[in-house]
Image (tube, rainbow, N blue to C red; front, side, top):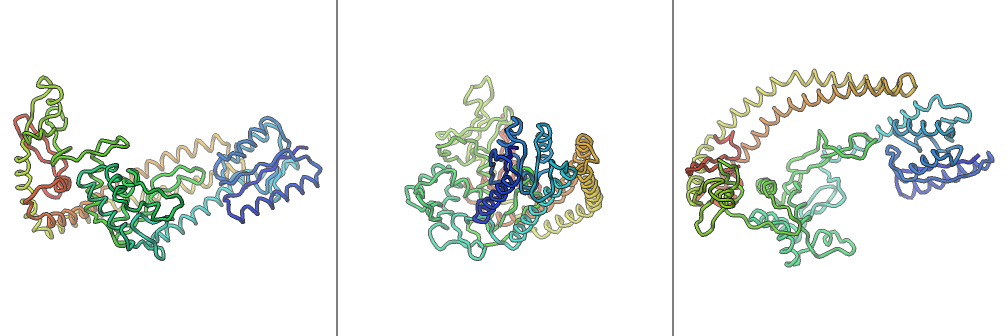
Length: 494
């Protein structure tokens, strides 16, 4: 009888390598005792919850080709820790008259012992799920204690007892320089060139990596600009795997976000401004720097055709892009002088700043709205969450029935599909309810933020690109120079 051996461990550490050798020795001894012939040893270093293991795939293909008579494994979990994979493997083996022998005594089809196959498959998947939950819980616990989980700290920081601390060198100033240059209108590739020319240490050089490059790259700049950790906020556990049976990551419904976790290098206002500018910029060509923008670039739109207005520098006047590109048969000039826009903006912002003298009154009114929203939405989530718990229990009973062959695969799939659809609908309702309340809470946060901004720019004697980005969403220009300014935080400042 030709025997195939399947050996698997999860990692490449020394203990696991020792386990591989021990498993191999045990199987060779078993084959020798039985007087069988060794066909091949298939060895994987990967999780048993995934099917895409190179040697496992090869073994399945060889089984379909009838190249061996029996598969030996230490236990069923070595073959798979996933019910779906276990079930499919069982079908392939039985269809090709191949036997499975697990040396722990759980499965031995040579002795017609396969009745507990489904049960052991379920137990091993459930064990993997519980281990995964424990690991995730441990990481979450560390994150809640403000411990930085990633291996390398962000550029500009070092780690001391799990906490992020600004470095005592030039890297902190480099981070600040990157943010300011981007706000000033420079693109990531331009900033990278400037830092390279100035011979600032790159992240890989700071980490002391072998063969670290001295050249900065636009992608590195972009990562720094997107990293919220620079604001003193620790944002972790933001994504997770949907299930142990897949490697695909999805947003975590409950990320760990801790405010004021460590000393910031960049203010939240500056970070949010960079985020806004980044979203607005449409030029994404790799290797090109984004051109420096004019005062109202990307903010002015034609009311009739919807296109952006272009600045004609010699006139210091903005014109409809369609008109300038295609002529008067397609749209009219919609021209507006930059000086007029600056004058209107100054007047409006000063008026809004005065309004925020009654900041505490506005804050009290908003708090009342938040409390009202909490009261109105409190009952429904409890009802929906209770039903979700019921569905979870029903699915648990179904999978046990399926694992001991009391339920067919078709009936199991049909029942779980219907329950999954109901769960999804309930989860969407919960998200909608929570989003209503979160919107009110965000308004409260925005109120605090805008109050600080008005305090910072209180006189508005000079209108800069930074002020325009901070306060303006867009400006719509009519055919006869009608001007409609749509401000950020519209609900709070109207």
